[in-house]
Image (cartoon, rainbow, N blue to C red; front, top):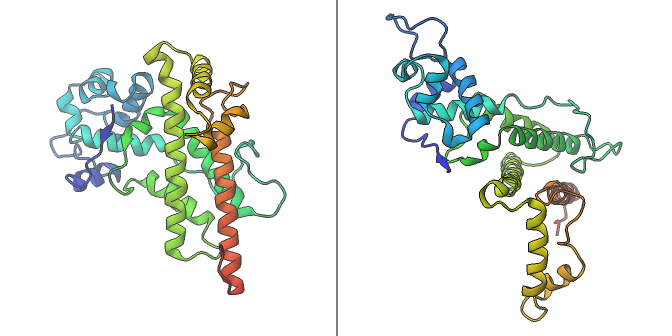
Length: 275
C-alpha cells in the first residue's frame, strides 16, 4: 500500500511534531517516559518488521504499553506519525568528506581530483543504504516538499556538494531533485522486485530466466529492432549479480549525468554552448 502524506492539509501540526513542539507537554502532565522520539523509534521498529501496512497508532501504543489516546497527546494522527517516522528513519546525511569505505561501488572516481563528484556518489550510496535498511520508506509518497529536519539536511547536503562547481542556484536545485528522484525510483524498482517472491512464489532468479525467455519470443527484429538487438546480445541473460541490482544502471546514468554537468559548466566558462 502507498501512503500519501497530505502535509498541505495539516502542515502546522506536522511542523510542530517534526521540529520538537510536543503537544503532550501540557500542564495536565502526561505519563513520564513517553515522548515523540520514543513513539517514533517504536514506530520505525514496527515498520521495519511489518512494513507500512503494519504501522498504526494502536500498534505503536500497544508495544509501548500505553493506550492509543495517550499517543494522540504527542502525535495528532496517523498522518503525522508517518511524517515523523519518515524523517527519523532517514537519519542525518553523510558529512562532506565522509567515507564509508566502499569507494567505487557506484562508480565513484578515485584519485581524479573531482571531489564534488565523489561527494555526490557518497550521498547516493548513503541514501541507497537508508532505503535498503528501511524499504517501507519507498511506499510513502512524497506529495509535498521536504519539511523535516533530516529531510532538509539531506537536501542541503547534496546542494553543498554541487554548490561551488559553476552552476546557477536554480540549476543546482534541478540537479539535486533529478538525482534524488532517480535514486528513489531505482531503489523502489529494486525493492519491489526483491519482494516479488513473497507475492508470487517465484524467486528473483526464476524471474530473470522467465523474462529472458519471454523477450526472446516477443522482441522480434521488425517490431522492436533495438530491443531485439540487445536481447540477442545476451544483455537480459541471468548473471551472478542479483537481478534486482540497480547499482549498474544507477552508476552508468549518474556518471553520464555528471559528465554532462561538467561539460555544461566548462562550456559556460568558455562562452560556448554545450551540446
